[in-house]
Length: 374
Image (cartoon, rainbow, N blue to C red):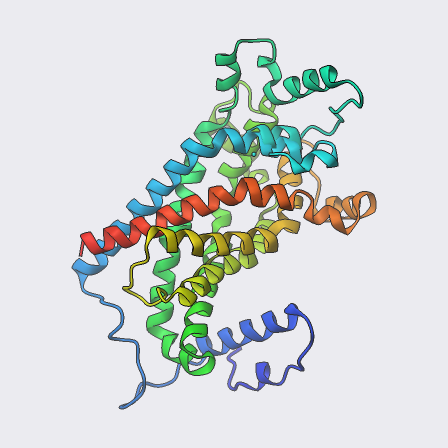
């Protein structure tokens, strides 16, 4: 049903909550998208802002693919072992959630205590087995290699995800700016309008990210429960498990929408504050890093509750699934509201640098290659 007036979102009563603001914002966005004004002489337009020549668009596409792919590969090489550790921490004793991500995921997926009060030696033994599993008794080389389980799934997922997200969001932003940029400027002001466009385009890209969920699920299982994949080929897994690999897709979309909104919105807001938010203005490495940091912290915080539930859904065996609602009810009963933000501080400390690193590299290299390939 088309929205024919601004009445729908302008008449919402002001409430002291973020929910009301988000609802008003999205209704405003929907209104603008569903009711593009007719183009008339003298109407403000963004047609001149974005070049649509074939050569320029080709250079932009190449730049976005190359920049985001390099960011994904670099992040994978630097952070995959840490990522494995972080998952394990999520499912260990709550007090250990302030620790560090292949080690983290193993510690989080181990649902037993490994800290023995007044027995540092036994605690060290438990940690050794929790982190290195079957390689616990082997040499340092084997132990280090054991921190790279699921590297194949992790590589496929991370590179595709970064290319899709960091390379795709500018494409959506370009189209939204071309079609509705002038209307956002008029309704919200230029800086706020540009920030909202960046945030909304990021939110849409985040929702579509669920198509890559099977690779993410297999990476998590390889890091936390490799026995479930032992002796099975990729084609066999996809043929046998089918749609079960999309377990938690709804929660993932619900997490990604506000998370990506905060990531790209916070990033653009920071750039606007530093005076480098306009299209065609290149930021320095430092400015890109600061903007990425602001966006990453906002994104991680907003997405944390649903991320906790999604991780626990993916950790379940193929033949023993649990719904997100079941996990949520048990979490609220046993851990309370604070359980939804379990691990937020260590996640900002451990996961934040990964996102800041890859987002900074992607933004800066995309801008560099766009300039070079023009």
